[in-house]
Length: 106
Image 1 (cartoon, rainbow, N blue to C red):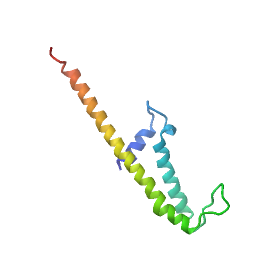
Image 2: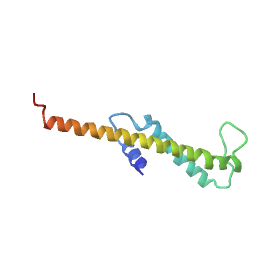
Image 3: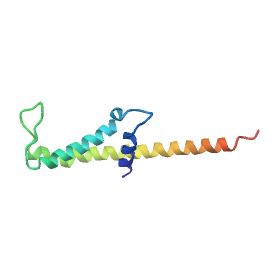
Image 4: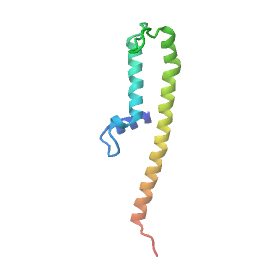
């Protein structure tokens, strides 16, 4: 859930990078695209651009059982890293505000 929220926030105007420069937004988009393609082409071979033999039932099953969960796991791990960095960022912001509010007495 937090991943979806962070992806949405990251996709908006950012002073850090453009959305197309964020590899994890690309990975999230790729996951959704693969899921849609597999859903729409249920029980049909999946063509590839560089190989004559399309993916059949066996290859599609491997995608569903191994590749998609691996992408989800990667995105979940990235979400954990983001949450940790956001917590550090918030702590630093609070410390800075507190330091500005209470100058050190010398």
